[in-house]
Image 1 (tube, rainbow, N blue to C red):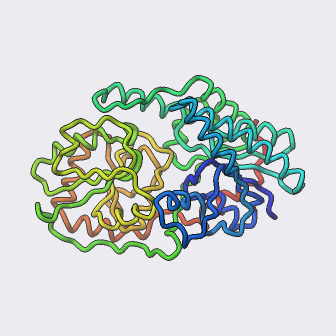
Image 2: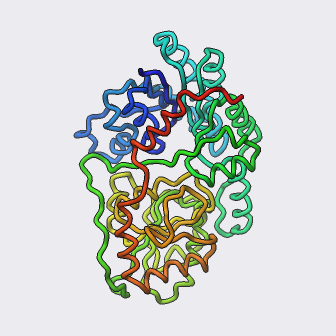
Length: 406
């Protein structure tokens, strides 16, 4: 029975919730801001390739509702007004909620069997109010660690003022709306124990929270990466360590860059790929051990994974960080903090950082450089970790009959 709607802005987590519901014949509609309908063979330009990432082949026969012209009008209007940062984020969230609430009312009128709605956090309050009025169930997908994460990031920006970009705290209205989403939710889904602990610390009822780790599957036509053979690293053949994601203080980039200085003459090359949202000190812009890639499309990211020897994520806070699963699928051992999804088994498929600090990161990297056999052994275990989409879907479906917790 197709009886649940999924609401989301963008291609978050590769549409994992919509795909899981669709596989189990429970997805009545995916409602999103923009959905690409450009045939794959025509996606040759960079613009069309980026647009093509706002879709998924597995949902080609699903009912997808989007608002392309309204999205274009909103973005054009925001640029004209000069709206940036939180002003733009809050305006987009409010705009999307108005669109999805209207669409949810129409869907329910057409499909009386529609009984529930899943929506990601910060864009759910208005459709959830309507859903509750219509007697529908509500599940909130919490994308991050909430206000506790903001406190962590604020402290990190104060500590690393040299790197700090234009970050500022969210306005009070942002968190007021989030509190309403929590109140209107029958269940709150987080992807990690880290997020659960942070939400409980922020006052969310622990009994209302369910942890469902994210799942990742390789794109159609791609094969899992093969574990690397042991090789000795040298200045002419350094160990390539990949950081892929938003280049922000929250992701631990300040500690990571400072760790490079502690590596001395160790044969290491750090590849930093992703949108840069910090002030990069001059000494790191031209550092001989660092390669700056900037933003990369999803297809190019796979190439970077496969060209690296290890993946690193010293994040201060992440709801999960699906890049961990992408890296595992490419056969890479991981070096990650404990402040995200539980993917790494320390000493098995990677190394866990006991703290996010430059010395701890440098020591973890050096342990791999000194022991090429350890790199190969960790890489050989990457195929045995990570949830499947079937696992994710089964746990999600178990929530669909949940009763109200309000």
